[in-house]
Amino acid sequence: MTDRLPSWRPGPTRDAILAFLDDIDRVPVDERVAYIDNDGTLWCEKPTYVQFDFFVDALRTNVEHHPHLADEPAFAAVLTGDMEAIGRIGIADVAGALAALFDGWTPDEFGAAVDDFASRYRHPISGAPLAGIVYRPMLELLGELRAHDVTVGVITGGGTEFVRRVSLPLYDVDPGLVVGTLIGYEFARDGDDRPVLHRSAALTGPANEGGAKVAHIQSHLGRPPLIGIGNSGGDREMLEWAQAHRFGGLAVLVDHDDAEREFAYASEAATFADAEPILDVAARLGWTVVSMANDWETVFAGA
Image (cartoon, rainbow, N blue to C red; front, top):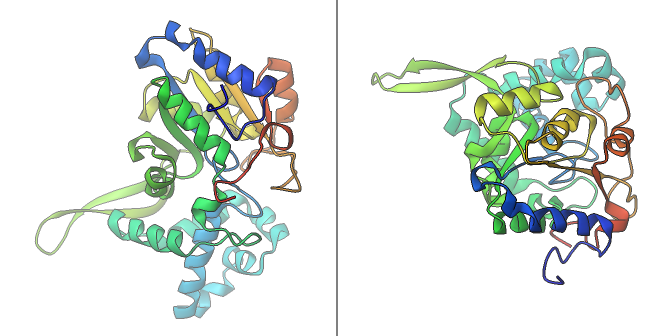
């Protein structure tokens, strides 16, 4: 047992996860599917979302060439870090304005921009690179899931294409198994009459949180989760869906209760008000709750 989930401390949480996996032979292989939230579940989401930092980085570059952009209310709020103004404008509208910075870009151009940012990224507090803010215990859990023939997908409230660009090098998850908030594309032809796609500024459907996560997973992957892992109110419906699996699923909630090694906060949905604190939901429904402070011997992969 000691070579399984070595960064997880012995105890009921680790035991519950391993017991579920040790009993997974009762489930047909094609129904062994796990969907895992990204922000706050696979990597650190504080003090700001990584993808938000990516868009801020792009905004600053744009402002250098087009100073007038700094006068637009959404951009001014972002550049000054005015969270009150961002709340007033609305996180969805601010996110839309930032996404529009890449309006008209091809998928390859956007992917190259993500690669460049990922190579330069440093966490604003710890200074860790992108791979260093991934949770080591979660990487070990991904390996344990695969050892039991579980297909692993990554679900994000952020933009799908951004996470698809990093899912393979960070998590060994195929980009086709990433579902997030979807941006629209427009088909066109270049000067040589070859087909080309361009990003639009419009979202395709709602932000990928709450019930939208379930709908988007079904629409784009078509396989319900046997295992759902998340950390916030935005993951509630996905975890409820996993728990309701016909073979009896596993819902796991990561609790950020370690102010010393990470951050201590109550995780909430980003785009809507939670009807009930997610820890209360977990207690009421009998989910497996992972305490970062008590259940993880090591937090970060770079540690």
